[in-house]
Image 1 (cartoon, one colour):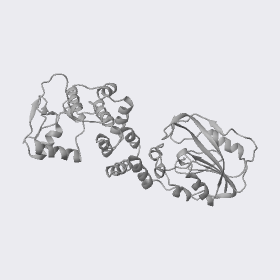
Image 2 (spheres, rainbow, N blue to C red; image 1 turned 60 degrees about the vertical axis):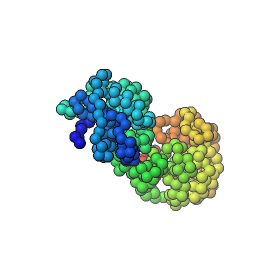
Image 3 (cartoon, rainbow, N blue to C red; image 1 turned 90 degrees about the horizontal axis):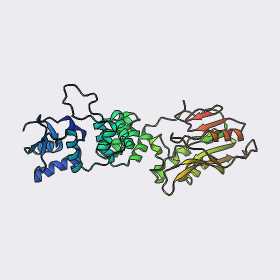
Image 4 (cartoon, helix red, strand yellow; image 1 turned 45 degrees about the vertical axis):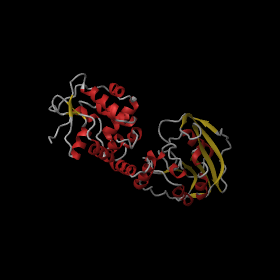
Length: 372
């Protein structure tokens, strides 16, 4: 059988992979080729690459039809595939990204596609939002081949893949491999984070009177994989791991702990408080103004628990409102500076350290992976 070339327009849709392609080969062997393979006037395949490859695999002579040239190659290919293939939003976004990339970096001798569409036109043709298209373009630009294929096959949503594209190639590959084995995406990210996370630096020497902590809670351990998607942003830790981070070894006999916790982790966080040698006393509530995902309500708050070891009442008698209203930023897990100012006002004496800090602060030591 004569081998045919593929027209560039045909490449906007991904080829079938694995079981999907094997099923097509088996179906053609059993029932023959139902739909024709469409040829461009220059004799290359305009539509039907999967059927063509399946016929070659099955040892069956392909059946062809010649496109009459009416309209455009692009519109023709999209209309046929829309009718024949059931693509989800993410898969359509990846196709739109292929259309939006048409003409970019193509060798001059390569057959040109008749239409080069703008970003907005490509999104409209595949019925996807521009945000989804931008995510797909990022995946195409920065994702590994395995990540791209995972989105094209419908295994990973394009929005999640765009976040993964920020990670190192090894990280992307590990997540995709786990997803292929049947592990849920959030759990695959959590497992990869734990496998590749940077070892925490050594604790500073000395004893601290004031502890400020924003732990990387692992929601996977509480059956709340979807809450906040923390695992997508940083290596998370289980309750058992958090209990062993060595706080007891660096605090004074009389010390205070300010601990950030979200509603889903409120009950289990007391195991960490106890493991660190503290007792719960009071709490602040951060009113974030903007709402956030929640299983039972629209969450717009977070708790800052006040816990003590020994006797450690504030150095100043000033009473702050227990509810602090500050609109949250777009940065995941970023906390308002107002809370640190409250702590500095209430406790003026003794050394202070921030656990799991994500930025430096004057007068504070830091313990964590992120601060410069």
